[in-house]
Amino acid sequence: MTEPSPETPLCLADLAVGQRARIRRVEANGAIRQRLLDMGVTRGVTVLVKRAAPLGDPIEVSVKGYDLAIRKCEARAILVEPEGS
Image (cartoon, rainbow, N blue to C red):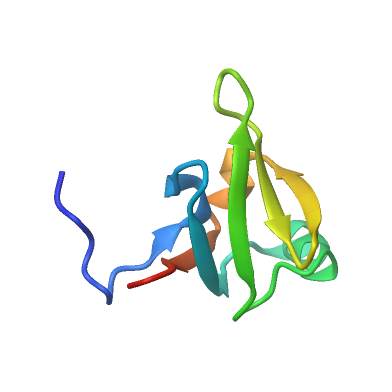
């Protein structure tokens, strides 16, 4: 598997446990988008993937000092730029 170029954003669901990233864009729509924005998942915020459930869904991320469990289907709508890239 090749590394994505800096122009190719990753989604939050693609990150490994322990990896940090900065949110580039939230592509969810409707009520899900509004809920994510209300919980602080906004452009420019740094997130840390803390852990994943045994079967991989949901994942737990740290956002603005609190932990948030998010389903992978919702995490795929959050485009991020891994820290250090």
